[in-house]
Length: 199
Image: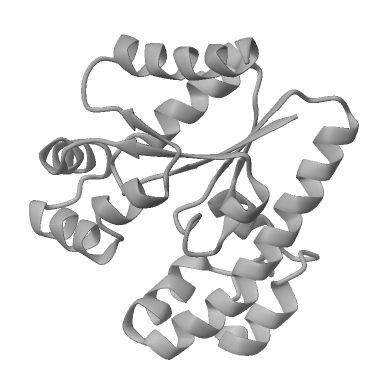
């Protein structure tokens, strides 16, 4: 089984790359963000710890954790953000490793893991390759304004808060230029995967 990590800044179009890998190449796609939501659900491995950290005020009527309330707190209080991350990140990583093992034993040929902090959390230690999805800053800003309704200022502030391009490029095995056409993005992915099959 081949494992690929996909990372890149907000608005670079990681989800486009993931859907091509899933729909056209039969990849099993795991997204750290979605698994992070799962582990915070009632019965999830982090539910009790997150509840203990934030208190009952963050519960909705159905006993699920109100992620908006949690994000409002962590946005303003760095210490709470660090505490939350120290609960969620290791649990997500453990769950991804468990799923990779499961997929491998089922005979899956390709698994893809997407995480915003893929490199910072050292996912590359257990993945075959890291792909960095790249698009120019202006393209990313326009995409975010259109898809998420962000103001230009908000886009710029979020982009500034993330790792810069040189950091990603220094750690990536492949840079996917996702700032042009969909066909161009698709061709880069196919070429890389075909290259591996012929090796």
